[in-house]
Image 1 (cartoon, rainbow, N blue to C red):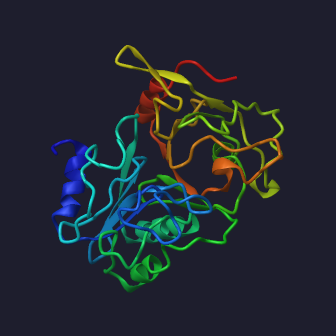
Image 2 (cartoon, rainbow, N blue to C red):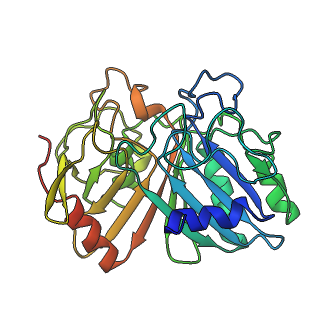
Length: 308
């Protein structure tokens, strides 16, 4: 419990903050209306929690772990399953590599994050105290009350938060490949990404690759490489499905030292045959951090083999 993720979660679970927890893979604990074990599209492919105090100040934590977290306070414990990371009965959610990204928020940031989550159609239930404890500023409460519904939006959102971190929200209704989308919204920045890459896998694309599942309002994406291996502590690590469930990326342009943390796998379609396939038709978020040290670290982590 003394690790950063455990300590952060403990501050929430054993105190009296307001929170929203969302996850498209609760495995029926709790049950989400219209879902069986997990929630398919057009629900967002998104997991995490956002927490705040009476003034609307707090943090957001993006996770990639199925079925965790699933309760935000000891007064509303999860029933019939575990709520400790790695101790969930329904799935081994640390069998594969995962990522956890947390960011401090002021009230204005919180409002932008909540708008981004609603646009991405996150899976939650505002009537269930296990998942949502609403309170604080009235405008924050109003936005929380809009969560847990499938958005009909097909328009992305982009915010620059007070920390300088850029937040992008992809709606489920925008049927485009996720990481080409992120590249385009970042003005064609070339990217390298490592995600759960398996069914309906999207290959490495070049600037010249024709992306037929596209929205011309996005502009043109840059090249997007698919990392299939990396290195940790001088040991080669796998970065495809069966090894890695994190969704991380970097710019391949050192003049733009971006590290990127997302909800979305690089799975779907670029051919135009079925643009609603896979993650093309799922909502999610991207957090883009311009920090040279973090950029270098993630770049070295996912440097290795590249899919054709």
